[in-house]
Length: 366
Image (cartoon, rainbow, N blue to C red; front, top):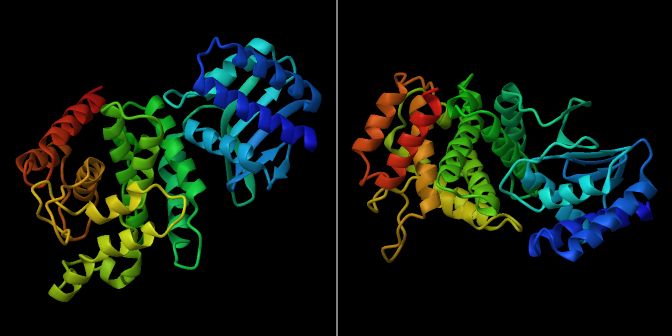
C-alpha cells in the first residue's frame, strides 16, 4: 500500500511539474523515470487507477486517505474527462513521459497509447462498465441526467453537495463536444414534467459550455461555467412540486414566489465550501436582463450581469422554448433564434446571441 501511495504522489508531482515547466525540462525526464520505476514495482497484470464516488481506487484498493497529491490527481482526472487509467505490461518510458505531458494539459482530450488506456467508469445498480474513450450519446443524455437528479435530491442545508460528481458530469460533456459536432444531439427532450428541472439543468449546462468553448474558454473556467449552469435553478427546489408542475402560468402570488428562486439558490450556493464562486453569481443573475431589468435587482449601484450569467441566460431561454411544456407550443430552432435576435440588446448580450446563433447553425448544418 505504501508503494501505491508513493506512486500516486510521484505521478501527481510529475504532472504538476510538467504544468510549470516546458515539456523538455530535465525535471520532466527525472520524474518520468521515477514514475516508470514505481509502475514496475507495483504492477501486477495491470496497474489501474479509477475514480468511483469521489474516491481513488488503485488496483481495486480504495485510497480513502489519499492525501493532498491524491486529491490533486483525482481532480486532474475529472477535469481531463477521465475516471480510469490503466497501465499494462510492456509500457515504455517514452509512453509514460508522453502521458505525463498529456495529463498536464486541460485543453484537449487524452491521447491513446498502446500500453496506457484511459476512459470512464460508471457504477449503476452494482454493475460496472468501462468505456475506452468512446462517447455513447445515450449515456450522456440519460445517465448524466440521472446523476444530476441524484445530486439535486441530495441538496439540503444538512448535506454536503457532491462537488466531485458535478466535476465528473461536466468532464463528460467536454469529451462529448470533441466527439459530436451537432450540439442538438446532446440535448435531451423532456420525458415527463417531474423530470423537467433535471433535464433542463443538464441541457443548460451543455449549451452554456458550448458557448464558452466557441469563445475559446478552456480549463478551469470552462468547468466552473458548466458547474454553475448545472446549479443555476437549485433555488426552485424550495418551491413546491405542485407549483413547479402547474400546467398553466402561475397566479400573481405564485409568480412572486417563483421569482424568488434566484435568491434562494444564490444564498444556498454561497455557503458551500469548495464550490466555484461563480455558481451563486449565476444562480442569482440568470433571470436578469442585459439592459438591467429582469429579476432580482441589485440593491444599489448599476452592476451589470456577469458575462457567464449572460451565457447561461441565453442557454436557459433557448432550452425553455425548445422543451415541450404543456402551456407552450413547440418551437422550431430558427424561430427561437429569431426571437433571441429580436430581443438582443434588451434581454440578451447581442454579441453573445450572434455568436450562439452562428455557432449553433454551423454545428448543425452538417
